[in-house]
Image 1 (spheres, one colour):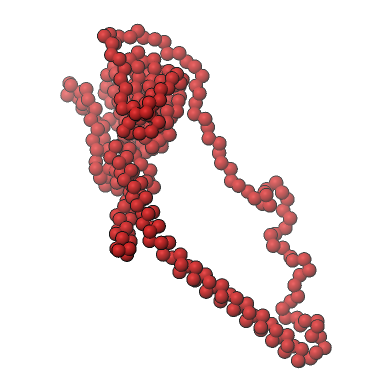
Image 2 (cartoon, rainbow, N blue to C red; image 1 turned 30 degrees about the vertical axis):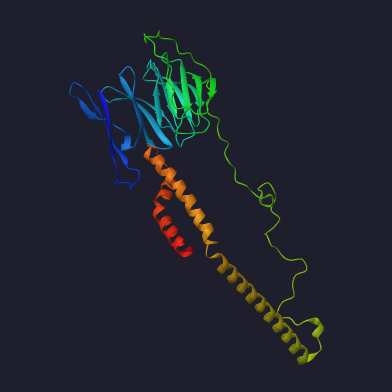
Length: 344
């Protein structure tokens, strides 16, 4: 039996830059073949056979909302497991434990499931194995290994050992670690062991962020009237004459009107000066700073785009904002050529 995943380089439906999986097909020696029924034709993150060859598991969906489906040898769905932020499947050699993790640009959470009763998978452990790039089981299925290898990551290379519950056992740091292998044995028929249950140390729940409310607007405080209420003492109405001019007749009124006119002219002049100053500041900053600084920023963005393109080539699924950054490469390079022509 075989599983064949088809892939489209260009997704005509969603116009995805990274393409889309076309479908997963099951092929059997007796001539039976079919399309594995994936809900809503969602993209496939990973698929693996059970070492016994009787079932296979598939992670499908858009990250982070993914689901793991377990199918039998006729592509019938047996069980489903919620697998948020997961993209990696690792079966134990005995076929009774399934590790489901999220690596690459995901946080590295790893869940362990007892699938002895394939119709009712039971979660038996959890661990966070962030930054690990290689994962495997021991031949007896009792230990799980996560390692950070070069050249995928050239920093913090190490190998970590866990129990099948996800309990940390040992870590060995290595300056440059390229590969790990279990020592082969003459007889791989290890006796079946009982999978013990224990209290799961699940992923800590993130506290919900609360909206900040200024103290003066807190609902616990009683309202003290509208903001910006009546000014103490008030202001004299504009249409009333100054009491000092009372009894001065027409001459006093003319002097008062002239004073008001002068004040208005002074305010207009101040406003005009302020506008001129703002326009000057805008002219100084409209160019986005010195060409050298802008050129340096563009080169930095192009380096980030090259790293993102390398991740796409390695088969990783990026977020929408990361794909938008890749799509801006042509515009950035054109701007870089224009800046270089100015500085020559």
